[in-house]
Length: 184
Ligand code: URA
Ligand code: SF4
Image (cartoon, rainbow, N blue to C red):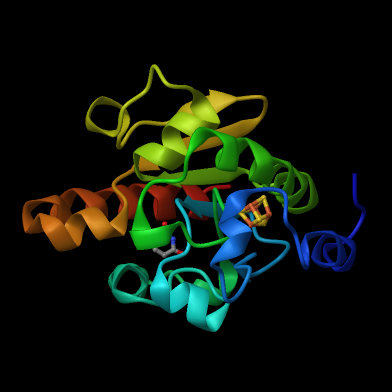
């Protein structure tokens, strides 16, 4: 257990708890406001994130920024992180042992942030946090309350790059999230 983000940064720097440490350039911990009411959880860093040390700065991140901007959500006002903090090779999904090794950090992040809302971006975040019985196709766009946190699964923005028809759902989902946030 840590009490501050400084302690968490100290704990994670040079982390070698899983094999993803072997090829990373940067550990990608987070971005945004560290006392936000809302947290976005993606999957893991891609090439751009690994190069810059910040989550969601590549193509998928730019798409997410556009949606934020269009809906009047300030990226600086939300907290953004990933399930694993080091880039999986070839952008493959993180493996079970990697997720398990890295999850301690995410637990610390949630305890420090104490978010009211957690947006789960894509299947890896959804299944890791809420369980394997969930899938984005059926769970997206619906609120799931657990232990005083409102979870909201939606598509991963990278999925919108592969399939344009998903954009409208993502947009509407974020609109729903913004309404909820405004009424907190
Ligand atoms: N995809 C993710 O899941 N996270 C990032 O930070 C970037 C792309
Ligand atoms: Fe450590 Fe997480 Fe990186 Fe694995 S992915 S080396 S557990 S910080």
